[in-house]
Structures are given as C-alpha cells and as structure tokens.
Amino acid sequence: MWGRGVGLAALAVAIAWSAPGLALAQDGYEITPELIENAKNEGAVVFYTATDVTVAEKLAKTFEEEYPGIKVQVERAGSERVFQRIGQELSGGIHNADVIETSDAVHFQLFKREGWLAGGLPANATKNWPKEEMDPDGQYAAYRAHLSVIAYRTDMVKPAEAPKSFADLLDPKWKGKLVKAHPGYSGTIMTATHALSKALGWEFFQKLGQQDVMQVQSSTEPPKKLAQGERPVQADGNEYNVFRLKEDNVPIEIVYAAEGTPLVVGNAAMLKDAPHPNAAKLFYAYLFSAEAQQLNSDFGGLRSFHPDVKEKAGRTPLKDIKLLLPDAAELEKEMQIIKSKYEEYFGT
Image (tube, rainbow, N blue to C red; front, side, top):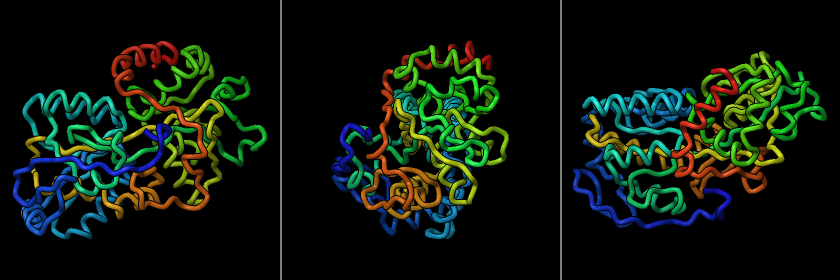
C-alpha cells in the first residue's frame, strides 16, 4: 500500500495460461491479434464495478473506441451490493459478469477462497505495479485507489471555520450540517470506518451519530449533496468526486484531516466461467493500461499505481498527505462488528 514505500517496483509473475490468444510470458499475458479477434467475435464484456458510473461509462466508451465491435455493459453499484450480487449469482450457478471491481479488499480474499476468480494478470499490471498491490498468486490486482475525505462548501463555510480534523466534526456547530455515506453499502466507507475506528476509537462514531447526520448510501453521494447545497460539510465520501466537482467550478474544498485520511484500494479481477472470456481478458488488460489509468486520473480523479500517470496540477500529491492504511485481513474479521456498531450509533 502507499505509505509502506511508494516506489512503483515492477514484479514479474510467471503465469501458465492455455486459453487461445494469450502470449505466455513470465511477466503476465500480452494482448495479441488473436485475442483481439476472439474478443470481437464474442462482441461484449460485462463489467460489475463500484466506481462512479460516470467514470466507469467514460472508460467503457474509450475501450469501445479502441476496440470497435465490443460493447461494454457497465453494471454499477456500491461495493457491498456488487459483492452480494456476485455471491448470489455464482452460488446459484449464474455467470453474468466477466470482470469485477470493488473498493473493499476483503471481497477479493473471499472470491479467491471460493475459487470464483479466473486468475491471470496482464503484462500492463505485472510490469508496472508494486508487488504489494498484486495478489501473489496472480488472482487480482489493484485497479485504482482513492481517499475518503472531509470536504466543505466554500460559499457556505469560511475556510478559517472549516473542520481541520475528524475530531472537529464533533463540534456542536456542525449538528444538522453533515452528510456521510454508509459502510453497509459502500466498500470505501467500510474501509474508512475500519481505519478511523482504529485511529480514533468507536467513541468518535458514537459522538458523530449524535450530530444529526444526513445518511446516504454510496461514497459517491456526499460530494453530490454538497454540490446540491443540501449540506455544507461531508464527514466522509470519495475524493475523486470532489476533484471532478471542483473542476466543474462547484465551490467545494477538500480537507486532509490532521489525524490522517483513509486510503482505499479497488481491486479488479476476471471471473472464472465468464460468459465472454476473451473479451474479459482484453478489457481487463485495458484497465491497467497507461491510457485507461491516465483517464481515471484526469477525468475520474482516481489515484493510479501506473508509473507513467501524471497527476493534474493543483491536486495534492499522496506523498504530502498523512494516510490511514487499512489492513484487509483485520477488516475481514471485524466487518460484522463495524456494521452492528454503526447501526447502534447511527440508527441505520
């Protein structure tokens, strides 16, 4: 994870792959003319994702332009809903999705244990990604990362009076003025809640629950509530939507909290028995390309592990932000505790 040494060291992973159209390479599979042809013959790929729908659909469109004849079907929901849907479908022998992506790292540990993943990483990832952001068995890799941030409307809150920390959100002056997302729906917020419970203790959430908080589901929603003027401050929510709103001239500003800001990694993988296996491999490789990763950064406001991606001017580099780094193994053990405590403190 970032913060354990941000260098993007390449990793060579030996992958034995027998599917047609894939070049055998120690550093991951390559895109070949045969793979492209087979993918075009299938004509479609189904992408289950927790990334904001506008960003995911923009990525799908650029892929379709790059590979005409292959239609991307984007199915977007919060991470926990994607997780539930995959579990229900695959447990029932239903294979609808080709490629999946969520912002809850625990999901991919479970998918791997259940044997639901096809395995195999593209060379785009294995040649460029840091070792710690790829499954050692080549089952999945980190497709994106982002932060869960505090933010506020600059036309409703003076910068000098804005919260500077999570502890500041407990000030009585913010009662009835906060919006936040839900860990039972959003993998981003599940991860962030875990990180903050370790940094601040559950007493923080108990007190926050008494602040008459507007509760929404997805981490994409708090920034939108700020944009609509329904609340002046978000207690949590994804950074990338705030970036995009700022660039659309919405008067909104990010706060990187004094205690640290939770970092959230979104893994992606191909599913075993995918209905469009060749299109899945082609699309999966595209996700890790410099082109797709730069689009995610420029248009989507996401953070990338690709060493060639350049951040837009004006965005705070990760190296300048104090990060709270979650532990996926520990989070998996505490998911039910998080959900039950959250329901107790927030009544939802």
